[in-house]
Image (cartoon, rainbow, N blue to C red; front, side, top):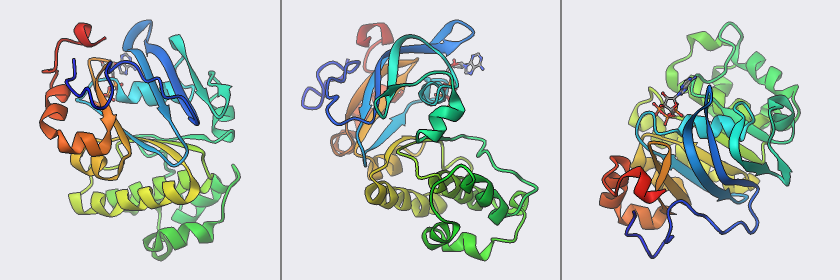
Length: 257
Ligand SMILES: Nc1ncnc2c1ncn2[C@@H]1O[C@H](COP(=O)(O)OP(=O)(O)OP(=O)(O)O)[C@@H](O)[C@H]1O
């Protein structure tokens, strides 16, 4: 169990639902009937970035997939923008709940602009505004997406998702395969856009310090259980505790659940 009594007493329980646009209420979700995440509760408010941390296999992607309706919950409930999340992924996306998947979800044979045009067909902002936020993409606009670097593809994946003006954006390892400098460039942009658009974000990220550097709050998952939660500021100051949670040294999952 966490000793961060100044943040939240029970790490599996989040009782602050006021103003949340995305709520997980004691959610258990998994694959083929086998739970991968158990009793997960969390709230994310407009403009809030929640960093979802944890080692490989902790259940981070599973949590995001459940939040867009791509995996049915086994028990508990997920609510976004006042309505329950169900299995209709496209409908959830139209309502403003958008996932940037870890495989980036890009069309590699199409140009940068054509990828953006396809995203724009789902509604939302203008391609010009994307190029204002990501000037690098403007200079690459005629390039085939498959010929972009990993960092450029990540930027495009983020830009595509932002084009639909989501209210809730779920990002699975934006920094996958990127240099630390590229991550340092992208994450502050995400912070600024979340602030501007009052967009709620869950950021799954392996770069713990960079994630805590831009997030408002954070949860560490271990073996599908919440091992630790708190404000990002408090967790930055208790880096050793975060690491202990990450490696399951705050107690066995059964004890914290
Ligand atoms: N399609 C699947 N079928 C069966 N089990 C799965 C499937 N996808 C994930 N799992 C299992 O669910 C658990 C959680 O996986 P998940 O991908 O959510 O973890 P993660 O925290 O995102 O890990 P990583 O950091 O490696 O991406 C793991 O034990 C994993 O093996």
